[in-house]
Length: 160
Image (tube, rainbow, N blue to C red; front, top):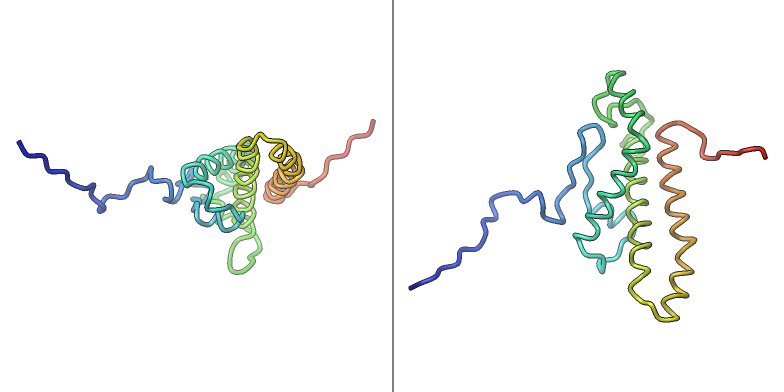
């Protein structure tokens, strides 16, 4: 009896491969994990599947905040975020830059938050405490990018 193992074909694109571009909903742009890793300065120690999961979470968070904006834009005849009228910066729509920024920063915030629990020693606890402001700052900057897309104020003030 003979067994011959054939390697998997490389001719077929594997959409579940962790380093492939994440296809978005059609209105919002697709996201390249390598671009997020570079933009958010995410270490190579973060595995590709973990990065992909964080990016998916970030896309869902941003989509939730921009759902009504997307519906209004589509109703106004703009099929994609790139079609929404916007100034250009470095040859690219500011809206696209803001979207990529929001996704990258939310993904980084999630990764920093999740990686805190790897070292539970006293030194690890102190380092986790030092990261807490960083997480808040990442989320704040991501929210600023979302609010810039919406054209709303970055600050909410309530009188008490």
